[in-house]
Image (cartoon, rainbow, N blue to C red):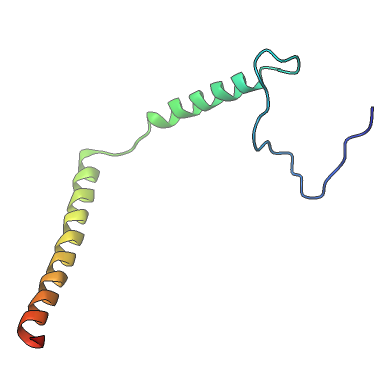
Length: 85
């Protein structure tokens, strides 16, 4: 058997796993990876950090941005109607 080639730009990360259930080289690594992802998702799903006050502030900020854009658009239309034409 020949030795594996060493590439300068290879850092060892897997781009796409080629493990297929039922094949002789399948080692169950994918199952462990899925379990780790589920565990991580469970940890972060309980720590959302958003309260009612944060939600209200976010909505208020969105309304303020909408009001500014609407006012600028209204002033532009008024300028076009009364000054240009």
